[in-house]
Figure: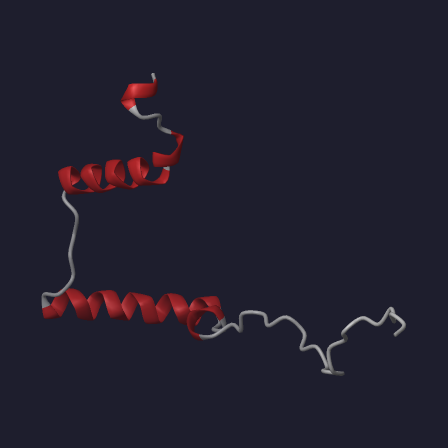
Length: 81
């Protein structure tokens, strides 16, 4: 018996081009229209009582929490210091 140098090949399947994210929603709109719709939504939320305004203390705490989360990989554990 002789050995052959054949390589298993995949069937001829056309490769699909990589999918890109399609723009939808506010990304497709005219910037002025998106701004107007956002403004109206904010006004409606305040009228309905479902909007939230951060107090200075709440905003500070939220910013601190976000900063800690964003840079948590940069922090070393205390036992390695």
